[in-house]
Length: 257
Image 1 (cartoon, helix red, strand yellow):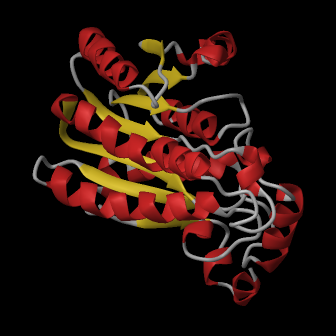
Image 2 (image 1 turned 180 degrees about the vertical axis):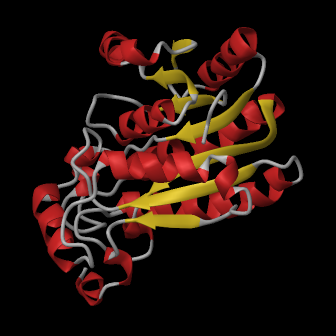
């Protein structure tokens, strides 16, 4: 499905990261992997990535324009062009992810959530567009909190709503270059990043019980969906948010959130 395709996956923190599930699925389906992550995770990611034999392992802080430019230049130097760019990045201050939206909201926290979770997709797309092959694909990760008021998700829900809108606008821009842009809305998963949301374990259990398929979603399921969405099999899909949540988004129980 992705044989000989070069994919850059950004955002791995551990083997519980959605980005890890995506990278592993893409490797299984034949992709050649490049990886990027925050510098403090370098040793951990390099150890996890040994079975994949990545063509690039490069740190990047998306809050720094210079890091984004350096990452694009490193990719260009290594392989020239890529076929797939995966953006699996999100962040908000921990105190913004508990209670109500207004309880701990600050201008700085609000802007940080949008800068890291949303602006970074547009910035990376702009930097990488010249080195993504014709019929390439870009994919990002979102969550139902963009569409519904989920307890404790707060400012991250606002940032994800902005991210999904950005996907549509970027799909229009990138479509001129035969490049597709999509998002996957995964059910709640206890990743290192999501662990910052208060009562995440309870939310995961509640969602599983209310879903059509009554079990939590896994990073492997999200990874397989992303591999498909970035493959030629999904060549007619762009500007979309694809739900991988065992049917929770369409279930009656989801309205209780």
